[in-house]
Image 1 (cartoon, rainbow, N blue to C red):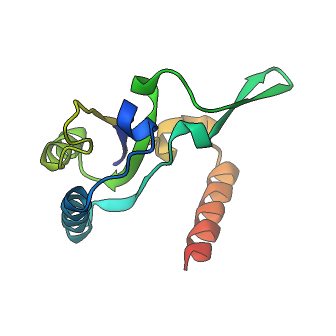
Image 2 (image 1 turned 90 degrees about the vertical axis):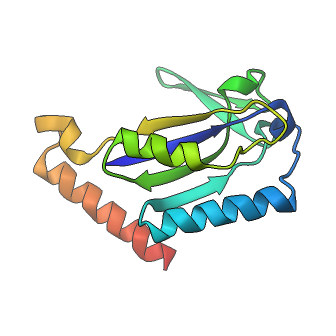
Length: 143
């Protein structure tokens, strides 16, 4: 099972406050533990929403909305992708994580990633083959 672990933004992260050396070291140690356990697939911090944009879809129309975005509690400041055996295992790992926003109340959300078998018959063998080919192509470009 794969899970996306979402580190929620705060007023400080949206203001562009960067982590100090102590937090960077603690997160580095935590990420090493994840990697050594075979859990870590990917993970990154995100720039504030003021440097981002959203594209709103309405039928064939596309509208671009530049950041910043108002609802800080709904924004994401960083993420991981983890491969674990269960949601409970993901929860246990998150509980071991250093507070990503020291001095502030912070929150980390855990969301399961869809796997091919979750889509049923609508995900035809041809579509599965295409998906596998695209994943292989993306992985090859990382090297």
